[in-house]
Amino acid sequence: MQDGRNQSQRILNAAYKCISTKGYANVSLRDIAEEAGVVLSQLHYYFGSKEGLFTEVIKMMINKYLKEINEALSMGETAKDKMLSLVNFFKDLLKNNPGLFKLLYDFTGLAMWSSSFNSLLKDLFNDLSKMIEEKILSNSALGENFRNYSPRAVARMILGAMFGTGIQVILDSNENEILDALNAIQIIFE
Image 1 (cartoon, one colour):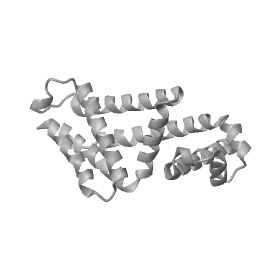
Image 2 (spheres, rainbow, N blue to C red; image 1 turned 60 degrees about the vertical axis):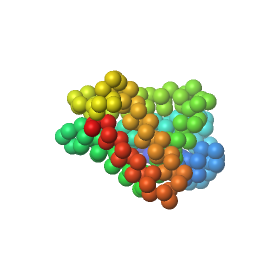
Image 3 (tube, rainbow, N blue to C red; image 1 turned 180 degrees about the vertical axis):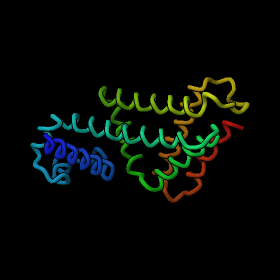
């Protein structure tokens, strides 16, 4: 059983690598099998179908995102410190691991058309909003312009701003000012 678990994990890692570097539309199961060093039938054996494999890749990506963002939100004492830690996490991720963002955006696009992907990505965004709400906004004083909004609405706005800025950075990685736009989120607490 251990060999099977190692084999399936190797396939998942290969799929993650292929999709995050080439994009979903440009990757075939044959590419993934080659990257994993297995025969094509092994992908079907462990995951059933392309959608089954990609569902598992999405779950792996989600677990990675949630764990890392939870760690970032645990740093600092004040809401402003935690927000700065989250901003720095996103900036670092965009600079050093843009493939993870590309993978998220690719799967988000697929979620528009696939109900199984839709529920996974919807849950991810709900979980991220909830983390921001609980770890940053629940015990903080919001700036004047945000006092009339629920912490949940502000958390969704923060998340939207971060991912929207992330798209801009990926599309124009030469424009350093875009990445600095994430710092503007601090206005929520002023």
